[in-house]
Amino acid sequence: MPFSESVGWAAMLITVAYTCLGLPAQIRKNADQKSTQGLSLFMNVMLLFTFSIWVVYGFTKRPIDWFIVASNFPGALCIIVILFQFWKFRPRIV
Image (tube, rainbow, N blue to C red; front, side, top):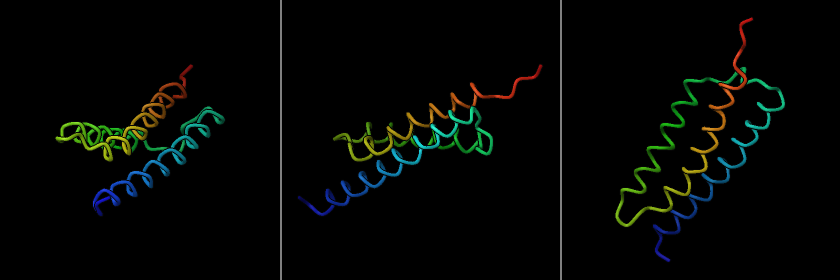
């Protein structure tokens, strides 16, 4: 296996690990508290943009760069869930 491929695997595994551990934990915390208080909507929108643009970039490379796609796609999905929670748990004005 070439060195660059080894580095790609390592980078992908590390990114998937922290994305798939940290973001689901945040999703659970939001759901338990029924609140997104303390989270920045702007930062989460920017994270969605960042993850998504990396996924698109990975698909536009020839051949497709699966290291980039696989490491950023789970993050984009989790951030979509968190953004839904911003809407679901928004403060209600009575």
